[in-house]
Image (cartoon, rainbow, N blue to C red; front, top):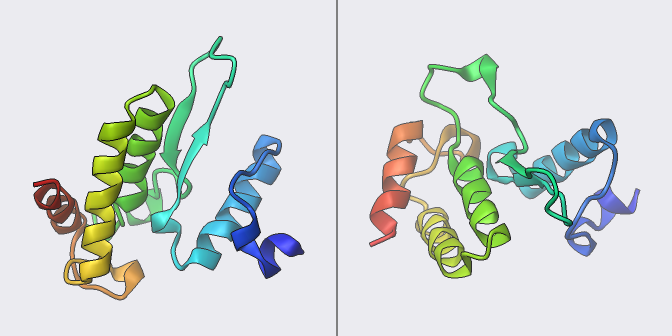
Length: 129
């Protein structure tokens, strides 16, 4: 229950795949959109590959409509960069995403905007400088 009542108290979810999927979906919705939440399945010992993806997965139900929020996919990339030690690159990407969201002019439908997937992605690229 605390996960729902006080989500800000939790930075990391460690659970089996099924429960991890359920909890991270709930966490993403609480923040405002599943399109904002990156995720990583990590091997902290680095014996096996780690995987990074948006919490929402591939969103096949909206494929080809141009309405998917690409921000979680982009920040999953920055999470991966941070995991492999490329902190400066990760920080640069995260700052660009934050700039786009804070500006509020190029937001996808799940964030009450009208921008397409490509427009949001292009806005992040432009914010990179």
